[in-house]
Length: 68
Image 1 (cartoon, helix red, strand yellow):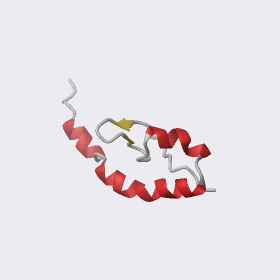
Image 2 (tube, helix red, strand yellow):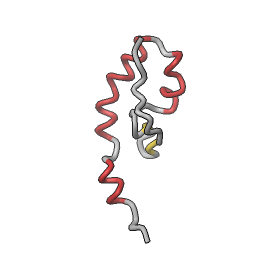
Image 3 (cartoon, rainbow, N blue to C red):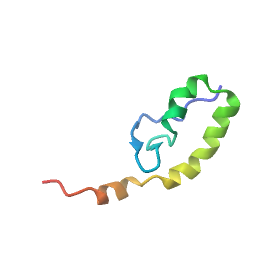
Image 4 (cartoon, helix red, strand yellow):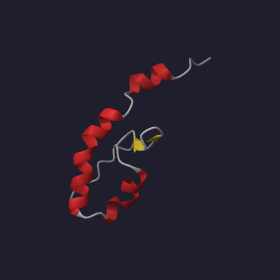
């Protein structure tokens, strides 16, 4: 069985629709336990390209307004 790529950082990036922790969509996260091995492999193979589209943590900090 293929383990979940979840890293317990569960927040969806609105522009991409991907989880910032694991790079899966909400539908993929919700359906992971029922997904076939083939589907899990397909999802896992797409994650590196998705992660490249997510903002890096330092980018998010720079984009945030300064705290007062």
